[in-house]
Length: 440
Image (cartoon, rainbow, N blue to C red):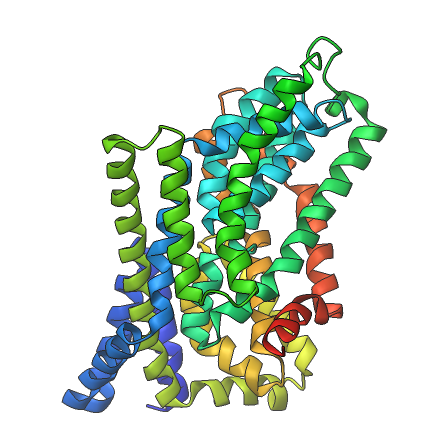
């Protein structure tokens, strides 16, 4: 049996196991380990062992539980509630102001969490009921929350970029900085779209009434102080890292400690909050660890077969495609897979194929990490089985139907596609900040 056929058989077996409902790490790890033993006998066990040791020795891995913990302690202690109240008071007088404020809320939550799930949970439980109660169009605001929560995997400290860095062997610090400007660009495009649409169609997001805006300046500044606290946490972590005062791992520890102290100062740190935070942190961290380990094992076998060279030869020699055409096909395949899988599963399934191929085609792997993440954002909201679509359906009130959710994402997917095209056309939007910081 040729190596090309073996590689195809491995990939097909893995996809079949995933379709039967097997856990991602179980399917990928089993196929990788079985193929190693089949091809190389007892010596194949060294591949899995070597992958495990390589993972355990990778120092930046310590950031993973820290950032997950930080996100959950902020969520469980309800610090995000204060932030939304601040946006509500300060942005309410503007057409679509509460929806714009919700995007601002999502940016800050993303900067504290690194996962889209937390933003979705906070948006659906805090922002959505308020937006609906104040007469905002249910289809538009459903799209706002889904689009805003997807920023969690792009704005630093993105856990997805940490995972990409582990698998692609790229510096996480550079990936974070590369995601900062594109993340803010994407949020800015969302704000422009909301403002323009609510200006043209005022019934979609009317400003607050005069009675609702009747809040004293003392109350406004009190809420502003409460809302600044999450920004202080973000600066204490990312700001110190960018200024070169702390390392990547140290900044994650600073963020986790600052978030805990903030919950304590607010009087919201108790046994129930800590127990829920630690349990969820442990669950998510262990899940990521097993997935990374399985992906490294699978990737080692795939690389040993020379599958990457074979795929490159097929695209370039057989189909006659150029580097940019191959890159665009990769992004389209991510969107298709995103209809059925989450971002982690997509990355570990195709990482052994795409990441080395991107390097062979001459593209920057830091820049490609940002493209991958933006494409995951789009895939999250793509019917029929986009990850965010079902999260929203599970959290939304009964009056919001699945049809409403599907319709709500169409304009935001178009906006995100525009953002992706801009990053592809102007790579320095992603690369300027890491080059400036690490070139100092």
